[in-house]
Amino acid sequence: MTNELIAITVLWGFIFIYAVMATMDFGAGFWSMIYMNREKTAATNIANRYLSPTWEVTNVFIVAIVVALVSFFPGATFLLGTVLLIPGSIILLLLAIRSAFLVFAHIAKEYEKMLTYISGISGIIIPALLISVLPITHGEFIETVDGVAKLRMDKLFTSPHEYAFIGFAISSTLFLSSLLLADYSNEANELEAYQTYRRDALILGPISLLMALFIMLTMQDEAPWLYERMMDYLPWLIGSVAMFFVAGTALFLPSAKHQSIRGKPRLAVVAIVIQYFLASYAYGKAHLPYMIYPDVTIQSGFTHPNTFRALVMSYIIGFVILFPGFIYFWRLFMKDKRYLQKNDPS
Image (cartoon, rainbow, N blue to C red; front, side, top):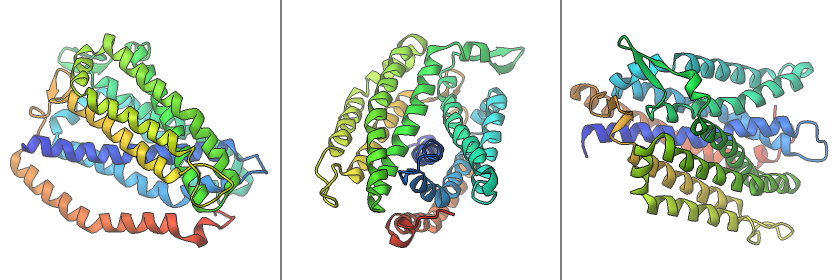
């Protein structure tokens, strides 16, 4: 494996981890807003219990993505930074607003509803904007005038391909978060909340799959070079769809923990993560060697080899230090009965 492939694999790994964790995080904020005024269900308390310790950890990975992109691929960073100045600034602003309001919603009780609504809505807009980076890298929306690249916003937001990605981001955010919250509710013995989130997952799962198919349909017209390459990885895509049906089946299996309900949500969560891994692998491999089609490849945007070796050593040391901590945090968060079953998330 070449240095460039090692670097892009590390970057892809950060993006995948953040994509899964952030969609669950953003979606949990939205469900907290939706079920805030429903007294007969503990769904909002469950969502807030999930949000309280995880949104800080999730933000660690977006920092890792930016650092890895700037350090490994400075050539690509310059072009992306130029064309994404406006949407990137909006994303950072929304992230700051959401993070601040999540904290204030639990402190300023008189403004709790308003702050929860703002953080919930911004949590749905953010993934829709984040995923817009992908169609931009397909090359159809970047125009170079007098040697300066600029993003054709008018062309981007009149493109069916862009809205296919946005629809997929929103539906996936709500689907993944409802599935994880169903598992979390099951662990906390909140059966009414579990039934609520299981129902939401069963509704949003097929919608998410349809949005993925819509992406492929629009890709044929707007990024045929990528569509043809993805067909070379058709077995991975078929495997991804198969894991989706495994997850759906798991939600109808008899529960091993509670005889009064159906579903094995932990199995469903694992199957869906594998599904997204297979699909994102096919997409990533098909996209290579281009980072931004057709101007920037992983070779042309790559850093100096000496810098690369120093960075790899830094990342290895960092992971040795941090990864066990993340594992311990997750196990504590998902298994600590005192936290799982408390009623007041603040």
